[in-house]
Length: 322
Image (tube, rainbow, N blue to C red):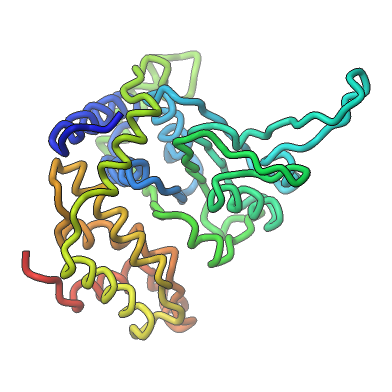
């Protein structure tokens, strides 16, 4: 089902946003960025210390979308077949059967992905890229729409394995969840305290807002939005600037510019527009590029962040006039 107009699509997306807000207190920017990735057909990496609602956000999104939901808790002993599935020999039937793994779903929560070794991480990231799993030489496509929301703890924490740059590049956006404001934290405690049998916010009362076919229709609509050559050029100039910017040791590859345009289109659709503006590109630059650059050791020693370098770059690279 394809939405007739961007304005109609924006109304559907706003209804989804309001439903999510029933379970999630604050974090509106994070919610919007997750919805941008959903509309752009991309995957999301969410980073933050434990207890900030990363898993709650994914559970709430799954509840508001009527598709299938799966979850993998990544641990040091998790094997690649625990992610993708495997082939078993059925003694009773006398033949091999395929047991599909949890990746065969619409919305997959990969919880604490950086607590598993690289081989297991790679199994999931391959599915993200190829949209299929190969078992015994037979390619099996995952259901559509397919989206991975992976959470990770900061790499400074004990027992974490950093994701390699080539694997990070497969995530459309990397989101950083911070501590809530004092008022938000107060409201959160008050709301949870009303339910004495649980220590978490409830998502069971959320209503489905979009069907899987509607999500695919929104994605097609977003992909078809007009992008002026000047806006495309702005995305390319931003990405190329990261490659020789002071303080950045490794800049973004071409996939960064693609991410800017894809996410920019999704943001424009959320605003009910049929065209992409330079502000759309600028607003998604941090989540689209922060995991695609690496700072110099000197910058890291000084405690600088990728966001600080990117903000400096955004201020100095001239945007086209709208």
